[in-house]
Image (tube, rainbow, N blue to C red):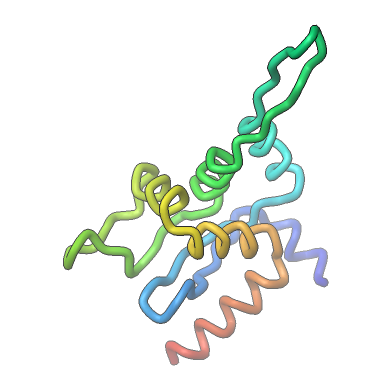
Length: 124
């Protein structure tokens, strides 16, 4: 663990999701992750007591929009799918493996650095 890596929140990392898709991600800090999860939580009252309900799909979408800066590889048929908030939402809602990958990787700075090095080595 290098604490200097945690000081630069603007750094972007290219990592491979699979053999055809690469994603440019930003590290999502624990503090920011908590803020996003709070946005995906609603409070309702049952018998005058607050009950919080977490919408995991909304949490995935919010995290994807926060973490994903760009991508290469996703397509609409044969045409490249641009990295837009709408397309990120489609991917995070509909592709379980992709959503799980983003959730697992974007919060772990050491893993982002390792995956970027691996992707870079493959492309050389």
